[in-house]
Length: 304
Image (cartoon, rainbow, N blue to C red; front, side, top):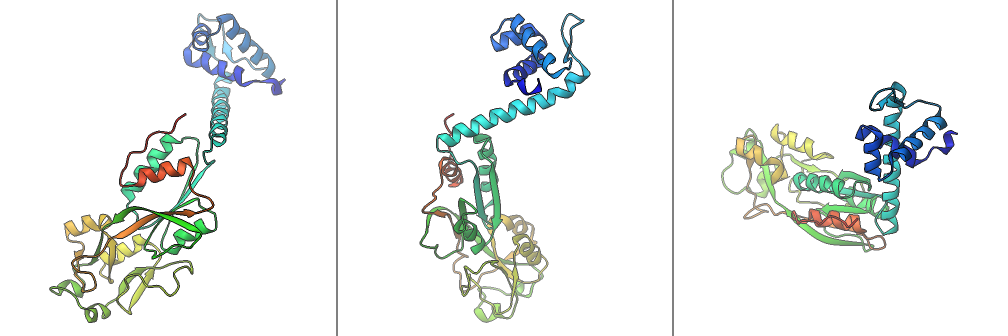
């Protein structure tokens, strides 16, 4: 008889608990109290468990009923999610959205977009990866991610399209204890070559033979922007960083700006682009996510 348990019975069970009485549950479900009572009695008979103690004025959950209530909620919620996802897919919405984001992308903008996306698309799983340089393009090329947010790359492969999102302000910095911090004015190439430059490394072969604003033969290659930040603060070298990430350090004196002759009057920004394969462009959820990323541009909620 357990196989005959229906979603309607479980919804009625949950309504009776939430509303506090069979009559209130009937009003919520637009059914007569007798229909609610009959539905719940049938459910109890099918599972051979008494869900309610009916000895008082109002029905009270039994211990067994309490134990089964959470499971009933999970089943109903799961089915609601199943139907919502199926409806969305039928209407053209992606079953999930996988995004790989450049480590240089402003975290405040990214967290805003992710939080808003989860509210707007509660039944569309979002899979997020943070990478650097070619490691952003590679999973998009391999169709492991539908969408990439890429900076620093001078070009994208022919099979991909790109659209501009925003510019990330950059700054060249070092620790106040570093020898370069004591130099006044604009630093020349010979000054920079005498000291270690901290740079991000690419874990793919997509940037082989390319250099990205590397001006010293002495380099430490780091796969993590957080490690680069920590090493800069420790005075292990000099390097370029997103201004947003080091603004507090500059304000408090833990880092200082460097003026270098290659970047005058200031360190150029990094342009961020949304990249995706031409044969698999972003669907409605991906397009919504991109609109949210574009400079805080408001994205309207999807129709339901």
